[in-house]
Length: 420
Ligand code: ATP
Ligand code: MG
Image (cartoon, rainbow, N blue to C red; front, top):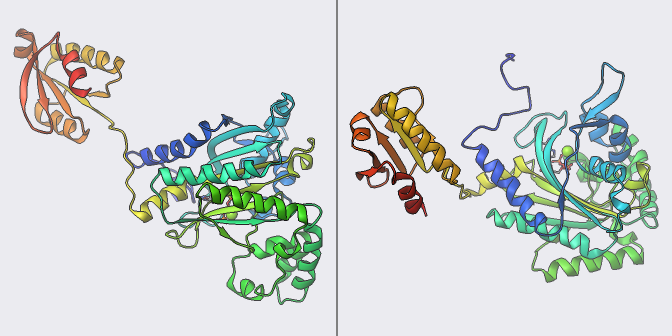
């Protein structure tokens, strides 16, 4: 690999495709902003211990995928592999939960890092938009988040996604199930590492994607049969609220998530056009996480949606987002004097919010008009010495090809009117 290539498992976002990424981030954020979620930004790295405790010592993320390192000063840090632990850490550190206004609702957008085997839809640097509602146990809050994610995907024009829903129980009923599952797993033909995982976190074995493991899990005990009455009632309420909102979902009794801290409501958004990397987003309730990282009991719920895979899902469905025009007006000066005069007009137009660009580098008319075309501009303004002597510029409609002189003092107002 050359020094001048992007590192393995990463890629650059370049125009014009990068505009789609921005639009996806924006589309996911919009319903959140509209629902009382405030924007939060945390550092790209944290003390490694936060993730070890907050994500779980036995998870793939912590054992295999984390970029952990020691600084020159001896601090043990890790690039953030996910957002929830950081957001909760920041909320606790700033005492947001003590301001007397629970739940604390936050949304974020940023880069995450996991040392994974790169594949389509699986990268070492990827992008998520996420939401966390901290400090309230209320089925309506779980339902709100699922409904908002559904809204976000629909607003993008996605159709072929599905919402999978499950409950993981709580500290009352999950241990009973855990023990039953462990008994079952001990009787299977599993490799050593998986058997070890079965001892530390048996639920995660259900998430094993290898077919030979999945085949043996057909008769595994199911969590639903072990839920306590409180968890059952809570889950039923979440299901009813989502259903009443017209959001279609599927009960998936086998759905567990990669992170240790989930309790009760668990969900995943999958897209059927993505092949193996089908999860476009996921989340759930994490009532125990705050205490795990040294905070008070703060039942919470959240999700993270993957921006990269959402863009792939749009492509798979052939959805073209209506992207805003990059450039409306393109100015082409012919000669020194025209350069100064048109450059001033460009600045004026930009101040009015009209997207304007300029032919730099002293190009001739032909080359400059080619650039004007490529820019997608609706109008070009062209001026040479003779135009300026007459006090006009040539205004060219790039769609119809019509061209007419407009007074130098009128051109800004004229364009403003035409572009409405
Ligand atoms: P998977 O099962 O595909 O590994 P995950 O359970 O690890 O996903 P989460 O930790 O729940 O994923 O992250 C939420 C979302 O972030 C995923 O649904 C996915 O869209 C995205 N995501 C996670 N890891 C990657 C990655 N390595 N590359 C691109 N997107 C990712
Ligand atoms: Mg993963």
